[in-house]
Image (cartoon, rainbow, N blue to C red; front, side, top):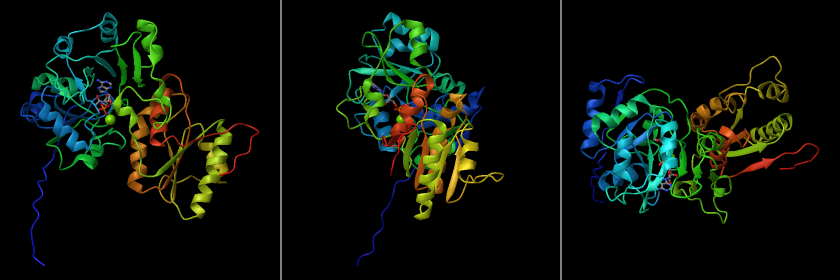
Length: 382
Ligand code: TXA
Ligand code: MG
């Protein structure tokens, strides 16, 4: 057999730390240069890490899709640092959008507008509309300003995996595929921005996020919500944000949600966990501060601690009294289960209003919509 050599063009990805609060010109110089030359830089935002490229250059957008392995019909969000830049991206800014921008920008809100001729179809996945967001993270804002580039940035994960909330997550997925990762530590919010379509009246939420329906309605009155958001991806309802139709945010393990009153949920999850362990599979449980004691009882572990590592690992995601703590840890926890090779992941459900709506939207997608609703007095068999 003839020996031959295959040359792989693997890019070297540099990781550079950047101040969370007050990034300097020097810290931004390399990143700005890469963006100006059409390259890719991952950077922190207040929601999740973004994979940035020049939003007004189709060739940069193409590189983003390649690095993420993302279907090219799934449009990108363009990030701006001042309200004036919005008029480069759209010729039509409705009054309600101005009011929302005034109230929530910079911040975790993305708005959809008809696109201007300056925005290439390569960035919008062929759509005549464009998604725009002004992030509040000081490093993100400073990077846009320093580079003079309006940055198209999807979440900086491989398509389908949980979004990255720290630089090490980005490295896991994109090492060797992008030029630079700016490491600004762990992000604050932990789930992606709320997306609102301003091209329809009343405006419609296409993806729930930290800015809730209630917060939007307090500001501009009635807002609708895309019905497809909380329903199965293969149902007849087609989500209006193309990205929401893909299986998404998914860990490698098989995730099931058990929804219902706390004690019933815990007893079902504990029973399932024991069955899976007996069959030789590794099990991860997503618990809350409220359910931890119930789990200890269910595993007859009074007085001892349930391990965070090992064949059975129980991780506390946060407190139900503070849903932001749950949003903050969700993706990171799913990635931790992936790193440990956990095969079966069992989670309790969360309320589906306010921030809970965004959490359940991501959790349902991560679970491929495997959810078991438990009611008091009913018997279930698996
Ligand atoms: O918080 C965030 O929004 C993060 C950070 C990095 O800013 N970005 C983010 O981008 O989550 P990405 O690409 O992962 O998600 C963008 C979503 C996708 O579901 C996409 O389909 C939708 O926005 N989208 C983008 N442009 C759209 C448009 N013109 N019409 C409808 N949906 C759009
Ligand atoms: Mg994403």
